[in-house]
Image (cartoon, rainbow, N blue to C red; front, top):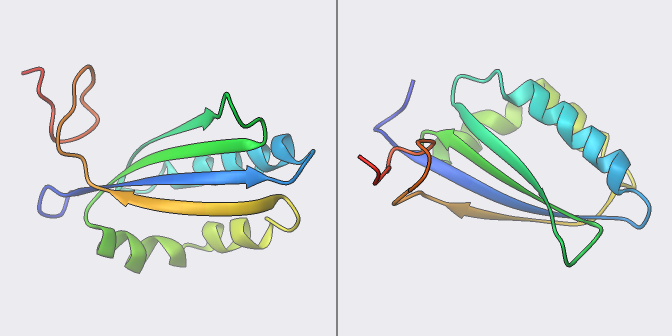
Length: 115
């Protein structure tokens, strides 16, 4: 169910510790496998950074507001297990919050312009 036709986008940059990228990737994919069943989940795309070999970038779209996401999603038991399992896999993680305003070539957001 979409609240107020809102969507929020998270762009999460992960810098894996040297030699830990594939272990982190497996850990991340397990998380995505769980969160894709959530009713507010729209999609996730995982990217390898071509210029920084230890970096992965995650692009997620969720229905609802940032506030809804921050209120509900971190409390999921699989997220707690994910956070606890990070151990020595990451050097750094940063999150950017976005809201989609226009889209061409797909229909993932509520703002498609190809109509």
